[in-house]
Image (cartoon, rainbow, N blue to C red; front, side, top):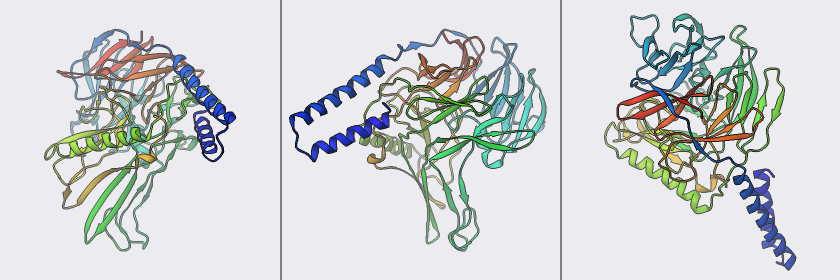
Length: 490
């Protein structure tokens, strides 16, 4: 029985029992339904394999500013994206630095760019580095040398290619680039036709973007520059309100800290895998053939009214602590409903990544004016930014939906949680259901959509990439900084 169908049945029978005479037959039926629901939940939980720790660490790199993505080359070398120091580094098979492939030196032709970029596998053994500032992509050959420069796809989608909370782009078997398009509606004119991207020009001024609750997964042909939509996925849809009174501007964001979303990845054979919010996987081959796996067993936790209020209260308390952190201080408000744990963030700068399963919103403390720098989630993807305080440009406020708008069951995962390994399996980072001192927990799903393994990472780590032969690359934080660690899957 599907989860949403189960909810509907319980609601239907509950209503019937309150509007009819509670006969012995109806009481027995209600008891049977309750027993069936609890038995089904127990069977779902028992069908899950036991969780185990990741295999042993094999090698560790020198400290870096951050680790958002790792690309293994055929000879064991690695390309590592460091968005804090804004550089792409080539490591040898022993994890020692061989060369700086791209950096921020103005004199070099291999400039990284002013903003954090992303890397992804390209044709053969080459790699693409996306520079969102210049709307270009560097083609890096297997030796770590920049061979040429290509134009990026549509400018509105450029940040979708960096990787992270918006998913990790890849290529299908026909060589088309698969990524999540933005789907945003930017209206830079008010209802009266006034101009101004941020001003109060004649008739309403700047209108904030409208965030839809679904987004297209698209396939882009780099040769023909043609784009088509493969599927739609459900996404987090915060609401931004922009007001101006007597020349004073105010921006507020209203978000759901526990959204029900779909997530996705591109398998090693080019198949698109979409993990739906009810926790089953839809597969789309390059020729358009679609298939679906069975629902994955999971211990769904029902959220009572008090539990929903606690989720909102926790997020609000984190926000208030962040805003009182002091002038200029930055702090991250964890979203995704995690109950704690050291998921670890490896973004800008190194910070909490939403308790190992969620995302984070960056808050600027002390009432300083001006937008905060981009916040990156645990795997380097851009996350929403918000600030507190009232400068000359007005305040930026982060608000939450009412508890009644939270889902009735705690979601299994959130945006940016799904990765595909070199063997065609999906790794899904779960939202923690209770406080833990360990690292993030992953469900491992095979090509048929079946749950085959459960793995927990050490505290302060996150998956940064995969290699052949069951190799997992981690971003690891310790007292010396952030490192890349090569580990075995088992």
